[in-house]
Length: 255
Image (cartoon, rainbow, N blue to C red; front, side):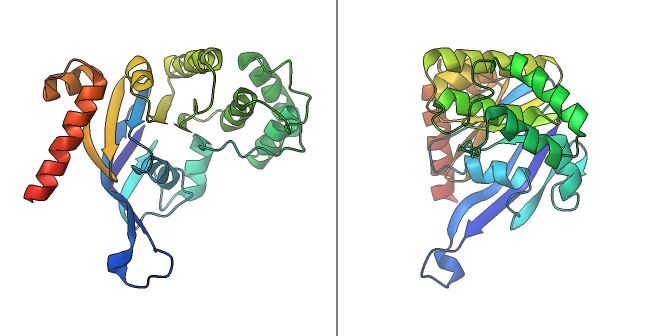
């Protein structure tokens, strides 16, 4: 389970020294993500999704706020959080000169798995993610779908309870997207906590049990899909998203 509470992050603007010139990437973001379910972090590019996930993954230190993952504090229990967490970043970041198998094995060993356990686990993931046709090939020249499967295998290799996927379907074709959705549903059904960021409304509506709408670095609304539709008075998520973010902007202006 993830519980984020008022997470905030600013970045220095190049060539500027005053704090008033800082870029506010995330501004007091709070949301929860439960086990045995899929939580969607929905927002446009630049909304703060990736920075939020990177703070939760202990890759970026929050300026303020806190977050608990499976009972562990992301500030105080960094190494323990990483053992519990599987994180697939927006760009797969796999090593092009290694094979798919070598990429996942390398990460397994970094996570502390013995050579025997790492090899056994990789074999399981090759079957689960249908990587048999390319697992012994070097990653240079892989399709986006193949890269995504390797990156997902790497995120899952140490059997984490909580899994965060940053826009994992970006660049995938229809069949690869459908396959990835089924894998995500299976993981949630097995009891994992899944956080899935996306800017694609239909994808979030079809896949997620719980949705946190993020805009301009802030959570505009958090609820189930039915709850968001009821609260905005809309019949589809796209219109509900616009209504929620418009309400957020109106509230900020009024404040």
